[in-house]
Image (cartoon, rainbow, N blue to C red):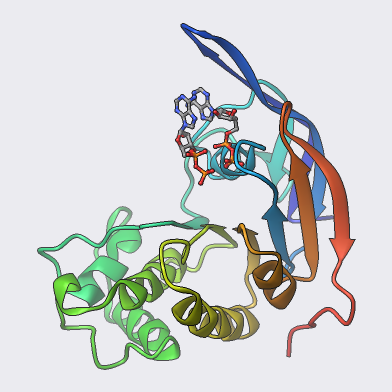
Amino acid sequence: RPLISIRDLGKRYETRKGATVALDGIDLDIAEGEFVSVVGPSGCGKTTLLKILAGLEERTTGDALLGGTPITGPRNDIGIAFQGSVMLPWRRIIENVLLPVELNEKPTPAHRERAHALLALVGLGEFGDSYPNELSGGMQQRAAICRALVHDPSLLLLDEPFGALDALTRDQLNVQLNSVWEQSGKTALLITHSISEAVYLSQRVVVMSPRPGRIVDVIEVPFGRKRG
Ligand code: ADP
Ligand code: ADP
């Protein structure tokens, strides 16, 4: 059974100016441990799809299942990092990373160890006690990936996590994201505007087109990476 199962998913936004069909008849299965990217022009529904999977937006029609259970609202087995994910400026990096844990329970020493290990994995081992304004934008985005993983979610959702950064920094962060994925064993879904990024990171690339948002192609990456 796939970890994520999307069947005939549709989303209509109703506004005072009229209705927009953001998603129409989306079908997609994602296996446990897979890394899938979604590409397509602005307005093709990428963010809407991710928001529905994150439980942050309601679907209009169809089904979106995680582990066989319908996604009906935010849940703590999903980790999310969006473009320009913000760190709370008055909290140290380690305390920012621990936020998703804190929403459910008081962080234990084991949680702190995990947070430190994740920071070390993305080259921020020395920065747990720093404040966000002491870090560059790229470093903060790396910390945001750690925050998305700290509560050991079964699914990682990434919406242009490095979108605001320059190309060289992005390349470096993608190398790190790749090793995080290889070591964590997580299932990941990434929105990106960059085909090369999608091909580098993922095993399958979902191509969408707008008006209405549909999947027009699913490309198996040749010589696609396998974990390990
Ligand atoms: P991107 O192309 O990077 O996803 P957009 O500018 O298309 O960015 O949209 C960013 C967010 O703004 C969307 O996820 C959505 O929540 C909101 N948004 C986009 N279009 C509208 C709209 N017509 N009305 C209200 N909110 C919108
Ligand atoms: P993408 O992420 O691919 O840019 P979005 O999912 O943000 O696409 O948007 C898909 C379509 O839905 C666009 O036409 C956008 O304007 C519209 N849309 C997105 N969010 C909203 C919203 N909150 N209210 C109304 N329309 C929206």
